[in-house]
Image (cartoon, rainbow, N blue to C red; front, side, top):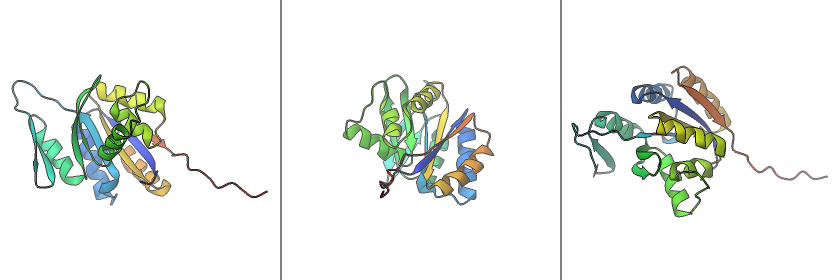
Length: 180
């Protein structure tokens, strides 16, 4: 997997995050390079369930239509129960980053599995902790990754959707040693 740069945005609600995904889609951004993560909300009044139908994950419950729509746009879906955060739903490449971090035992002190997934792709630990705190506070994270030019374009489109916060993380790429 290439270590592309990333832009991470925090949204107050699922509706705002969904609007940002739709804006990126309208702008021609590659949907295979987007991830979204948010806590799973359920109550006694709503049946909550997850199942696979063909190659798509489905969700019943209060926000089933939201997650179903997101999973239809983005590639990859998962449900995780994260200690300290709670049940979360993830769509996009972040799913594979989390799984790779868990399988590779890349758990970094004080970070959840989600944090380890973000850290493993180059997001600094202090930013990861901020993102985990946002998830605990019922916020949604939207992550776009790509080349520097793709990220610059995504950042401008995301900023137009009024997120709480937007950060670009440039992955430190190893530069070849110069000959002296």
